[in-house]
Length: 448
Ligand code: UDX
Image 1 (cartoon, rainbow, N blue to C red):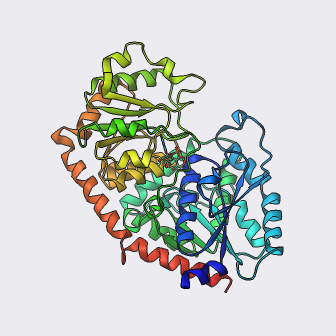
Image 2 (image 1 turned 135 degrees about the horizontal axis):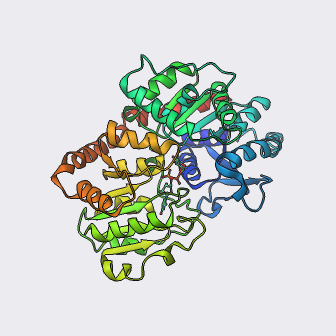
Image 3 (image 1 turned 60 degrees about the vertical axis):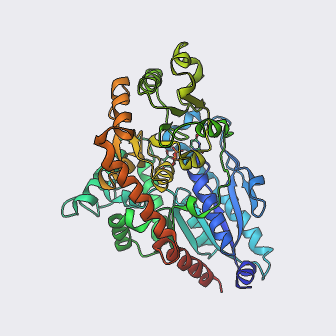
């Protein structure tokens, strides 16, 4: 009864950023809030539209994004800037129409947006609706403004006098951000921070205890209430939101492997390597003697058909010990008993998915938050080690340390322990469980 009344009273509009690592957590969050009784409208740019048929209970509305056919000319941040510029008008119009046709039994409560789509907060302000900013990456990235201020801003946080851990994380952020020299990047970063300053609430895909210091700092610096309800994927049933087709034959292959014997290798949906790195990876895996499941995504080596680049004798040398797919059902893979290690680029989703299954990680970050996530994995939670170079001997040694050598035993134990602790925080009375209930209450208070 209570759930039905809430459902009638509150509709949430979600605004997606169209890349795999952002679509997944946003649709998971929408699913979680739907289970709390809210009805859901998903507004998304036409580019990389999610598969609406997997979510029959949601309303999907594509909006014009005015992006050119090919995004190749955009560079790292061009697409983010273009979407923030091009989608503001269409989003405003779309929500105005929703408000005009609003059913008093199904009122629009607020706009829940991916923090990268910062223009959504301006739309919310203009329409006098509350906006909720969702950080799909680690909470620590909200502190990015502190280490990389715009030229006209004062640096508001110096690294001196901070705890060792916070200094380490901020240095990592500074390192990643200094590599971005694209025009407009600092303005973009500032616009995201401005929207966080104006939003009515912040939602994080994280757990309090794994990011405690960063979260405390965020709460000190921003006035909006923060809700740490994640990891979202553990609260939402597994519905695929993959843009690429998942190849599930790897699950039958995994089912034939010994427990904890398989190294799973995937670098997410964006990172790319060169041909030499692909070959070193292949021979590192061939030589490590562990069974491996390797995601060789189209575009992993830019401009090539990656599978054709593998040496002719590679498949013969590994035989049934290796399984290569273009895209895997990753959460199912990591939950399979056969998987004992994850060689990852340390995207935040992959990192959370790995720790939730107690899988130790071999970290090879590429850009952005991945460097910071590597720090968390290797130096804060101590559930992984870093691969310094794409070199077959180093790869072989690192995989053995991660999965079999006594040197890695402590790390493997810590990974199991971390999984248990995260599990407890999701249970009734745990921090995530409580935070989700508080969030639902907060949303219901917006437009009573
Ligand atoms: C991007 C950024 O690169 C990352 O740093 C940021 O934290 C989020 O946005 P991406 O590189 O795609 O994300 O990595 P990640 O965050 O790990 O997200 C990838 C998602 O794709 C995960 O949810 C993973 O489960 C899924 N995936 C990956 C598959 O379903 N199958 C695969 O074969 C590989």
